[in-house]
Image (cartoon, rainbow, N blue to C red; front, top):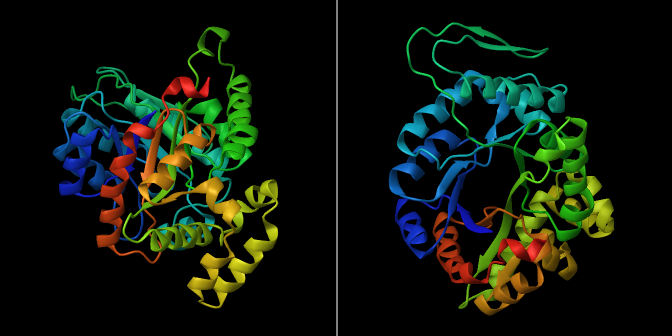
Length: 343
């Protein structure tokens, strides 16, 4: 598995690549654009993989996603991946002004239409026909040519994971993922999707790619604060009801009810306190460097097989502290299991 991290900025990013970080990803929110961040990554790194993890799929047309990746490919050929996520219903409706209904079917078509542009050869029409997207582009300028850029889907619950297996090259796991959620829910769903999509037996040996986020907060001088930040990040994620099947799968309904009540009351310390030790151990890597190394030694099956993005908490954490967590996590690089740990 490659040790990756969300792009920490130019200075820490260069230091991280020199230390052995093999991949950087770019998230997206109201104050930062995924593709602009990837452009910064490829401008200031030399070898690491780079891509959105994730870009909001419905914020742009398939054309816009594909043309951004084509321009980035000119700077970083062979280093790119494209991670797409459907985003929450209210973000699509209220922030983006984008259609929000039937997100699973819509994102499946988005992948197909993006690939139509990425795979387009010079001199050929770019065609795709679906319920949500229809393309018939005659691009006369010689600016195309097939690009094999992996397309991954952010997949939390079973339907999206199966869709990733059916139409994409792999999945991007959420920072909440545990070993049980990977092994009992996500991986079987992805494999079911591959079979439903008619993947030939000869292709099934090349398993879908797995990228994923890992909540990581390491601080040898103030480990209690690092643990509290990790707990607070877990609690913030779990305020969203999209993750209720995950909560039920682990039997965590009672602490999640408490942390949601604390969130509604604006009590962030109480949110963190509601996260149990079991939840912290199953989800996060935190505390001292020694604590984090020990956690990784126990957690091979709870990590994505290809790229893990060791991500500092962001909820109620300053940019300066996030950068410090990113630097501290570099001490974990040689603790990350190799791919044969997952066989």
